Length: 203
Image 1 (tube, rainbow, N blue to C red):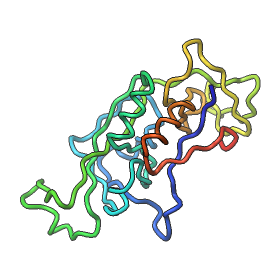
Image 2: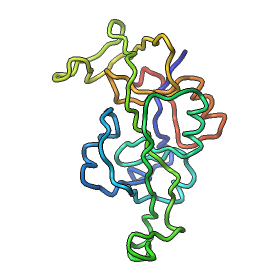
Image 3: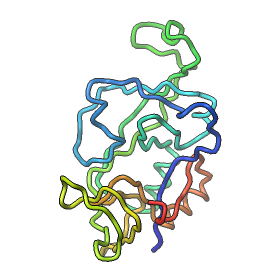
Image 4: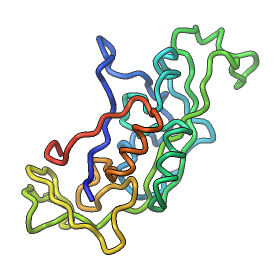
């Protein structure tokens, strides 16, 4: 079964570096794109300031903290492709960055419906696949973590006995979010927007 790297479609980007920017909260600096498996605490409401015309036209928005933010269509398509690894979906709120702060709310903590999009959640995988082929891959070992690699020149996977899940990260190299070929095809058929799929040689 072929596997691809899931990445954001940045072809629409011009001067901006992201479609959505996280409003920092205490501890947000530790999330690192949700690459780790530790279940860090999050506030009840996580807010991104967003280019709403772009965000409303995508299922996988480019963001400044590299969180895998997914629309309901994208999540449901992946779930339909097979069981996901143990994970949690972290709800986020997109707020129109072009509306002045004083005009975003009707009351303290109450955003106007027309300035928000609450469809998106961040996918945080709480377990990673032990599928890195240590013999055939070419890599630089992590200087502090013996079972991790810092840099990969050639990524080769070893398919687990039960096969790859539709979407996963590698325990040895969690930097990339990977998708199974049939899951990629399902996302394309569903018309999921905002995704690009790289071959493993771009790891």
